[in-house]
Amino acid sequence: MDSSSSIAQGPDEDMIAAGKQFAQFGAGCFWGVELAFQRIPGVAKTEVGYSQGLLHNPTYNDICTGTTKHSEIVRVLYDPNECKFGDLLNMFWSRHDPTTLNRQVN
Image (cartoon, helix red, strand yellow):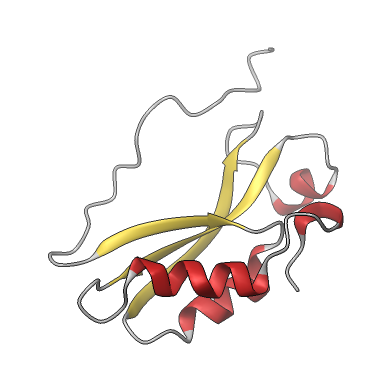
C-alpha cells in the first residue's frame, strides 16, 4: 500500500447525545436508503459517507471508479425509546437486496 492510501486506524470520535444510539448500514448506494431512514419516527439525524476502502477521505468521483474498495454507508442517530433497532433493520432489509448488481437499493 502506498503512502497516499490508508485505512482508518482509530474509532469515530463523535460524542453521542444522551439517550441516543448510532447504527450504520451499507446498502450499495446511500441516497435512497438515507431518505427512508429519515422518515422513521425516532430517527434524529442521518449522515452518509464511505467505510473501509483504500483511500483516506475519498471523493464521490473516487468511489465511482470502483477501485477504492469503499462501501457507501448511512449512519443513523436514533432514540431507542422511540425507534427500536429492529425497526431500522426492517426498513433496511425491505429496501436492500445484497444479491443485486452493486447491492443497490430496491
